Length: 166
Image 1 (cartoon, one colour):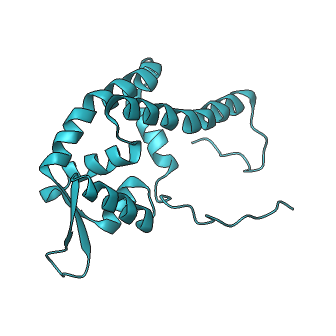
Image 2 (cartoon, helix red, strand yellow; image 1 turned 90 degrees about the vertical axis):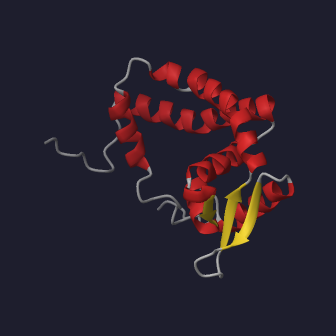
């Protein structure tokens, strides 16, 4: 087992190159995927993610807080997005059947059709902008590593607060 370096040890050349490549990809890839989706089918990335999450949920329905967690939006942001998508007929908002207090987002047939129309555009963009660049890598190892970056850290704890370095 290799010993981890002190957290304040400067990065070596390979680590620095990996970090910078990752940081650039985190900023650029979502913008490219979003642009491709908007141009191809008129959906934003977050709208597409909401439709995917709902399509995969039992009964094609999720509590609003579950949908927020799955789309990495705030609860209020998810509420606004679902309201807008409901006006388009893509989702419905219903009281939760189990307790009546919570609200559920439910995928409509129109929303499912829209997702099916969007899927080829999303898939083509992911293949050309991501997967083609990973062709020579061990994808299972890559997925484990990248998946561990955000494990248990879906919402940053210091959001909105700035500290000055001392």
